[in-house]
Length: 139
Image 1: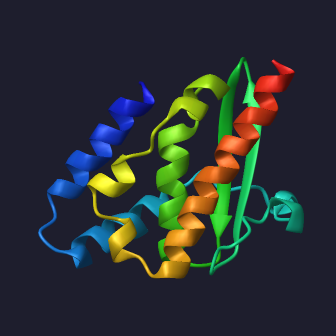
Image 2: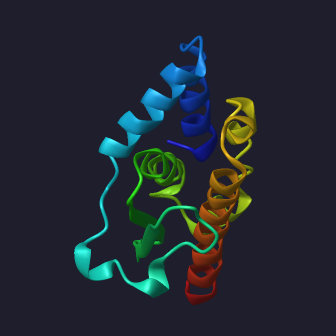
């Protein structure tokens, strides 16, 4: 499934909720389905800089596609990184680099996060794209 289709799925999911309490609960629920990074990879070099909470991200290139695993010590942040992993994992470096990620704006996420969480979200996306760029140079 394309990145755009996954983004549209998430937009549809969030449109069901009438208020942000429901949306936050959905984000928390997404965190429960996150492909968790192995404990041995929870190292300082895999921490996302600029996040309010600790967020570890790992990427692997398999058959020309990047797969992400992650974890966080906070439930909302875990849900946010799970959402980004859901959208970008399993795609080529070029697809990830071209992804607009405009679903974040369309669901109203940035305006409902604290400034530090919003900054952390931007840094998660940035790190995933940087990993993609690094893999692109190796492919």
